Length: 277
Figure 1 (tube, rainbow, N blue to C red):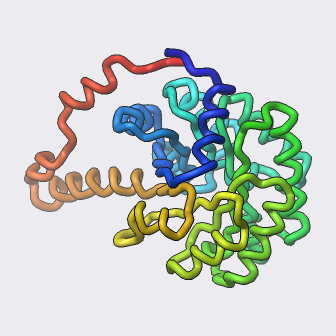
Figure 2: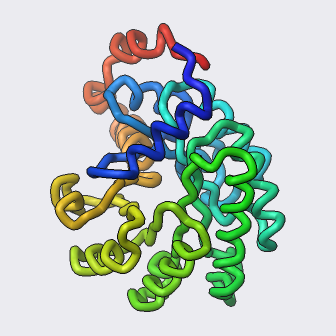
């Protein structure tokens, strides 16, 4: 069955209206199709996972490369895709808007825009500029398809500014600028998460779960979290298996770790008849 981008956006927006869902992050088309086979309702790209798969570090890719990657993921699965769109690959609001339009043309059902500047001296954009960038992204989305979901990310906890009050103030301003969903990766306690959920209500909140033990889906749902993503964690798990096997060969000359690999017959079964839209 072919599912259009417009249909995916309607489905994706509805997922944000009630309950709590997990948005796992594939890093290539194969991992996306495997996640689809497990019954997930939507997917999200991972900038880190995709960058690693190309032999580069996170934030080492161009907008052209990411848009091409998003187009492949959107065409290759029936599920709505939320794009990890970094900082929009631009500083100025209008340039962000132009790149958001490109992501929408690739077929994404939603996308996130960060307030991370990429500048070491000032890792976060000025708050007014950050809000203007979200407003520009909102206008670009509305000009194409208002059902696409705009996620605004405050990166303070990831760049060494673990100030919850400042993070909440920024998320509220992003919500006022037109963001549909708010996201502050790096929150570590139930109290922090609950405060963010309350501050931006009724707009939904995304929480990142990246390292064990973390939280369960049930625990986050009880806190009022609407959606959960895992960033590059699935990619890291896959690389973990790869490196354990490779190190065993290099260090011991043995191959026992291969027994922990996912069965090739199962991969063949899922990927032999891929969906294409």
